[in-house]
Image 1 (cartoon, rainbow, N blue to C red):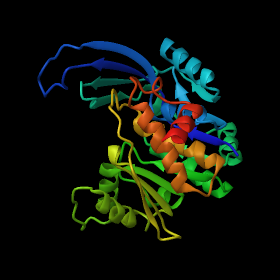
Image 2: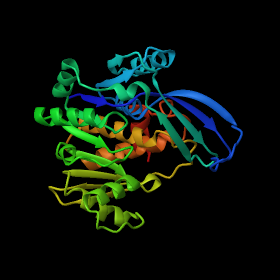
Image 3: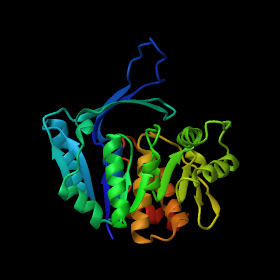
Length: 310
């Protein structure tokens, strides 16, 4: 099997701060660095580093930022299906405070031009075992890719982030939905406007995932340090995979690391969603102990060694 990721690629501009500024406030940075980033780029790198063959469909400019991103992808062993267009490469302005919390502002740039999938891109999706999508690229393209994958029998994974209202046609094409507690709550409210929101404990996450599997066959609801809840419609089962307690340095990209590692695990063992979630949980825990999105993504051996000793 193999995987395809369709998504965004940005240059991350990361400022370390004592605390994230309030509206109208100026703070001095304690550090600055730039890294490859973007949800699609982070996730495809995580897939590759976790040991799976993967291709990336994305849109970059013709600038120095694009050159840096492409070099990073090639180093990771990602098959490059990236378009180069006459637009600036996407960027993200990220602040990270001393407790590892962050804020992120994204300028889509070339990502917004990822439209009208080509025959080569569609063929890659048809031939893949899995397709991983997010929502930082045009929704029409995400829908087109998911619909095409579904028709070809490719397993479709949607990380519904950043969350927005989703057409039912997209949900109908999804085999596995990955959302955090905030995204799950927003999507559940879209599906049932009369529902009442409540704080998302583990028990509430099990119930909330149960609401979402009315629209998709399987859901993973991530809970940060509390781990994740896996719920599958066919079996009716719900499993809580506990989080791994670590001291975080930078949580940027942890969710993307989770998604990519999960897809790599499913590429190897497609029928064991719970164990794939355990593998992804370890990958995310390792990632938050290092700075930067792509630089923090662990390799397969690191993940396997950690699992073997814990």
